[in-house]
Length: 75
Image (cartoon, rainbow, N blue to C red; front, side, top):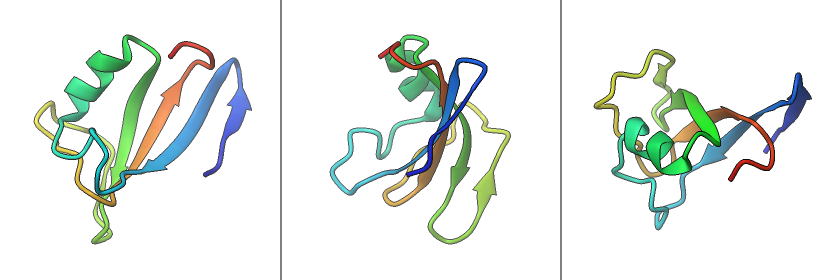
């Protein structure tokens, strides 16, 4: 995991584990549940596909790399 600190925000990549509650959820639902703590800016699929403009219906899969941007200490 790599975290960059700039302008009071963090950029983080999380790989979804098989038992993660995020698996099978849309990015929109995940962001809503975070209550403004972070936003998903990219999903890197295990097969190499990369999504940077996420439609509301994009579902996170097992093993996906989810790129988040957020403000520290907001969770």
